[in-house]
Amino acid sequence: MTLQRTKEILSDLIAFETVSADSNLEIIHYLTDFLTALGARCIQTQDATGTKANVFAKLGPEMDGGIVLSGHTDVVPVADQDWTSDPFQMVERDGKLYGRGTCDMKGFIAAALAFAETLDAKQLTQPLHFSFTYDEETGCLGARNLVDDLSERGIVPDIAIIGEPTEMRVIEGHKGCYEYTTSFIGLEGHSSAPDDGVNAAEYAARYIGKLLELRQVLKSRAPSGSPFEPPWTTVNIGLISGGVAHNVIASKAEVAWEMRPVQSSDADLVKRTLSDYVKRTLLPEMQAVHSAANITQQAVAEVAGLEPMDKNAARDLVAELTGANGTGVVSFATEAGLFQQLGVQAIVCGPGSITQAHKADEYVEIEQLELCCRMLDRLGRRMTA
Ligand SMILES: [Zn+2]
Image 1 (cartoon, rainbow, N blue to C red):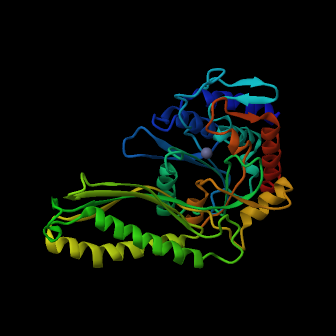
Image 2 (image 1 turned 30 degrees about the vertical axis):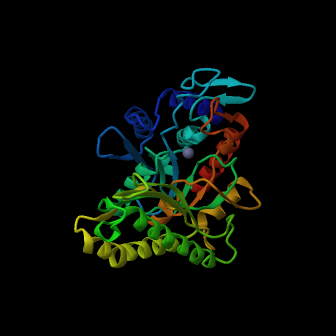
Image 3 (image 1 turned 90 degrees about the horizontal axis):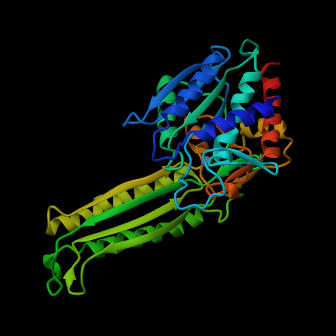
């Protein structure tokens, strides 16, 4: 029975200690071997260090389109968490399976593999893909690499189901999460002669002023009927640092900020406006005094949002498979937005609750896995019709 197999496979997956900081190659080998044995063609993509990899597998006919079941292999750390049992050894208690990643999100991966075993690949009328990635928890780095590779190879499936824990609800949207650190390098000097220096703190303040102006613009751009709370793209100034004393012109300043876009055009607008402001206004003024003055920006994370769309075949399909009588949005970011950018119709739907993720004694309810197995079983019947 598929549920029993899902539990067995999940137990294997939990035993791989795939905390994002560490290599995930062992689990990728396991997943690749598993799918290859079922007749899948697998593509691996690696990160620059060679210690992390994605696997993208295809079962079924050699044609375009098809459906992707997508999950990330990495998990959040267990350090400083008080676990009742070994987080990397799955334990069953009271209808729940405990272990790091049971809920976020190896439960879905296990269900997807158990489902693959039940299929006769020759009977598939369209391709079924499996996408298992690295470094989701640290900014969807693996998925970005994978989606770039798929784009280069011209592989654009029709539908992607991202199995993050939603208690099997159909989620058609989440905001993006873009985090930046902007650094200002000026020229130190005595505060009594402000024109002889370049005050990095003051330029940082003007930059922040521009961001706050944009915040108002973004409010007015909220799409009508936006399901998000709040319905517009938000901006947050999270950390400001710089300078050394009252009477010294600050030579360095740093601003850590983020935006959570409801639509990718908002993110583009913010990036373009700030970059123009830096290039045309701030930098020329700074460099007129001191040619080495500079403003640099580091993107800490750029996780694309999943924009709710009027037409979304993934939403319609999974709503039908789960019998959901409605869809929703969530406040956490996933890899779905990257698939959407590739041109794939995507939704998020998986077993377990996000409130059980990332904590000590993370668990998934067996009942949730059963619902997931049932959904996949129905999917299988649709794909082999
Ligand atoms: Zn996750």
